[in-house]
Image (cartoon, rainbow, N blue to C red; front, side, top):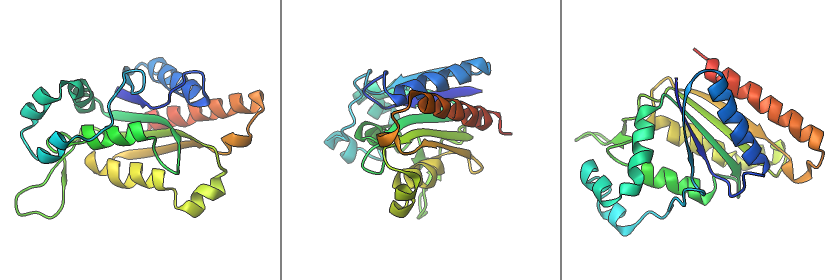
Length: 204
């Protein structure tokens, strides 16, 4: 399998940083090919520019010539069959840098196209057949359920639609981080996420 892991957290020493390292280790341990993007370390610019708005449905080669910083992200998305997102849930959803990655990289000509005369987008990243989300939440599970889990909806009801029709989705969330001071409990949570990721990678 070709696995792309996208990480969006400013600290490798955080719980999310530990999860990112654990995810990459599980992917390599299973013998899969791994590519990664640490968006903050790479200084990824999440701002959707005026050029991108005006050329939203323009020629892809021309857009990438104008925005060469996106080329590696596009090529890695087109290469992978499994996408893993590792990030903290902030303000009920993805961090701004990851949302900006969605805005800028999942563009027309890469993730979707709108066929002439049609009212619905046609997915282009049909090479992606597994989507795994690993995320942390400061609040408990019930709070996120009451909110409608907007981050989960964005990943599984919007982003997933750009992939293969039968893409398998795995949600691996850790809740209640704001009150989780016990280091042993944190270690057990990481082990649980490892198991979830292993199962997500092994689904047929």
